Image (cartoon, rainbow, N blue to C red; front, side, top):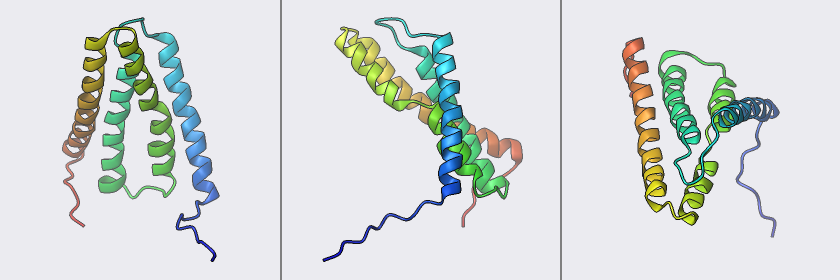
Length: 142
């Protein structure tokens, strides 16, 4: 019996723009982390700010490319998946929560854990709302 994969083939151009964007986003994130390093037993504010900023930007981007512009087909993979995916770092966030817990900073870990999720979701909503308000668009119903 031959099993067929249900995974769609990914176009090489899409992989290329995601890779380039991801590299750019990761370099931006690294630069912020190097400029503003985390302190032991304290909330790592640089990661928090990067994740919230990235979520705010994805809120803006998604409104612009779905409701305002007719975007090039590679713009969303480059900016959304690549740049913003490489810029935000929820894997580092998870490790930092664990590190805080292991160091005995349970209160800080809990604040960081919940605060990041709430602030990031709020940032997406705020970015979308501000973009819709600024551009005079409303959510598409199609």
